[in-house]
Length: 277
Image 1 (cartoon, rainbow, N blue to C red):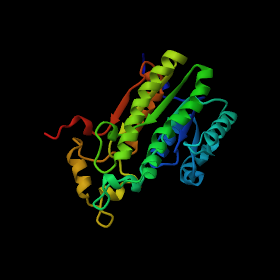
Image 2: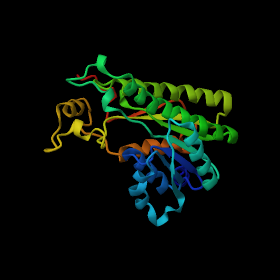
Image 3: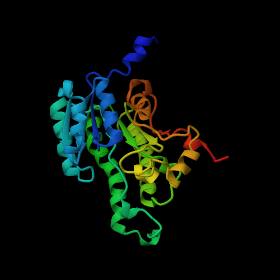
Image 4: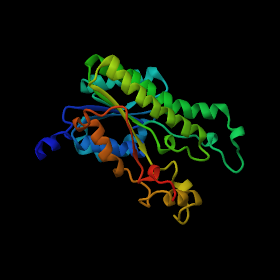
């Protein structure tokens, strides 16, 4: 195989991707990368206004991108989002399940023990991450099943490999996402079509709006105690940047990964490989 053939694997001309939580920090970069590789993209978010900065970035050739309302834990809204995407682009080739997150009320602290965490907060985190991955996979997966081809990419977390302190609900939910990724990969290949692949990436520690001031001091920018522990346990000695995800994402969606399904790839600077000694 020559360079031209290899390069063509990452040209997504004529391909359409639906990205849940697409207005988020990491998801926006994934969307831009896929758009830059000539894909059509549908950004699905429960607050479409958050996608305005993303759409401005791709505005000169923005006819290949749409923003659609959808709440990943409400099947009826996701069905409408999927229908609108198919109506606009004709089909959905890729689903990126990027919606997810934590809830401060489901996080332990110096004043809140595990025994105090309210069930509603735990349920919110479980629903957002697990149901928010399963429901879009059902709806888009059915469309892929009818076409006998497609690729689903889930977003797990380093918490699924090593549960972190404080965030019990989030760690458990992301572990479930990893397990579901493997289950769905087998189901699709055996029961539906071997041309439908399901994989996940597990980002390590990336600075986002959600965690920035847990890991760095808001006033000085210096590492917090928690941030220092993370860097000390990351062999590459830094936090990840959104660009660090893109190579793995593009590979897993591309024909270069045609014989890859049911895996969860850490993108973590070596965090999961390091024992601490």
